[in-house]
Amino acid sequence: MNHKIIVLLLGISLLISVIGCTYKEIELIDRESKIPQNAVKITPETDLNPPKSYSLDYFDPVPLPYPINTKGGEDSAFIMPDGKTLYFWFTPDVNIPVEKQLFDGVTGIYVSRKSGDTWSKPERIILQDPKKLALDGCGFVKDNLMFFCSAREGYTGMNWFDAEFDSSTNKWKNWKKTNFPESYEVGELHIYGNDLYFHSDRAGGKGGLDLWVMEKNSKGEWSEPINITNVNTERDEGWPAISPDGKEFWISRDYGLWRSKWINGEWTEPELIISPLAGEASIDNEGNVYFTHHFFKDNKMVEADIYVAYKK
Image 1 (cartoon, rainbow, N blue to C red):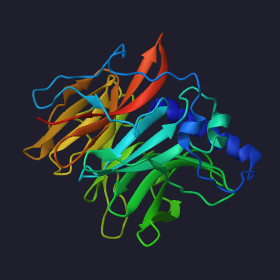
Image 2: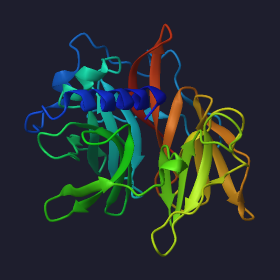
Image 3: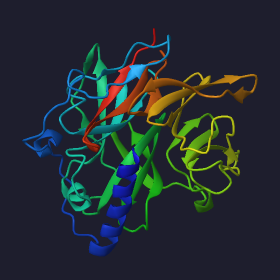
Image 4: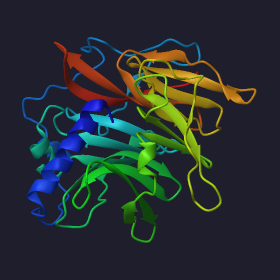
């Protein structure tokens, strides 16, 4: 999720603390029914700043087809390694105010599954009890465990939660606050093995958002975060993603996607792969890169879609 979405979540957290539990039973609403009638779908042909590949390893990116992308805002893609299950965040209008986003009944995390070349109609994932307020995002899935950030009733600010997938009901359950030490200030994350990569503007970095890594021990405790100095600068580096084979480290910087490689026991200096207005990479087993592309007009974001850059 981009900075604006995170700010919205924080605002929603404040709103929840003020109004308390007033939400009715959770209903599953067709997300497209909430998209403004005057919304115009932006296509690669009408895009003022289409993303391009700057690497011989990748074809130029293309948008995922409907029903993934709509006239609304699709963001924060997470692809499972087999390339057949996609999680993403959706809101019907990227410019609606916080209070409308909280009550529109459709803003949140969705999942779609691929059969052949066709993606299924995305389904909203419910991660809160009925009659309780919440807005969830930043989804990351590993096996049957999902990590997600949430502004929700009963908590102050935005926090990380995790939930378990119940294959017997095909639903997520047992959500609880994740045991990250608050002093670590964990931002958007990616887990590979026992290592958790995340971005944060916590003290001790090079400036702005930096990328950090911490390790979980046999007791389930997290080590002190280590700054990944080879990939960080005085600018913002964030939204980490590790390739399924553990050999590539993708980050967002300067409105583009950059790739670092694991060579001789360390991460190399990142190189620009995709730009402009590309962020939040997610990589499948084939090396294909799924990401968010934001559309701007007159310095205002008007839409967001999920794109993919296929590996050659």
